[in-house]
Length: 230
Image 1 (cartoon, rainbow, N blue to C red):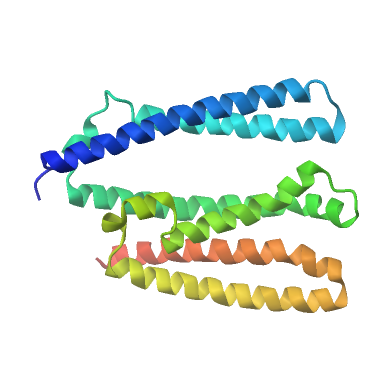
Image 2: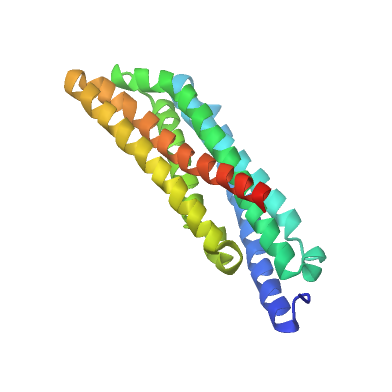
């Protein structure tokens, strides 16, 4: 198939300019968050300082992510101009699979780290940092589920490259597996909650993170297996 025609190239160039501007805005926002967090945190101690430290760390992450994205989308880059549709489809699908391997691993790692935070919250001693720590694995579980379902921005923007018959089959199997994990885990959490309510609450992040991770890993694994058959 031929490379992009002039109309597609202009459309892609406009989209890249908008994304480049968004990346620059992300860098600025991240720098502001980081600076504000460091300034406010330096004037406080204990949990208050920890909360502002989390804000500063999140700002640094945003700034770095924005800088990487801005470099990829920089005005002088022109490698994308010669990318054919099959190559772009392969690249985007491979990128999706990589995300569905990495994000579930991050989700499970954050889940392990959040157990101490959950203990503090259930003991009535939870701080802002503890609530953030407990929320992160659930947030990442939602991210994994969104990528698997095609709800994320990249999937919606590049739908014609990422949606095909095979994707529908993989998605159905992945979500089916995640649903089984969700039902099984929610049942266990319900039983624990009848016995000891605090244990039922503590089990919920494990259920949600497990279901989200299952969806992503199952999709990525099936994609790998179908790739071998192809």
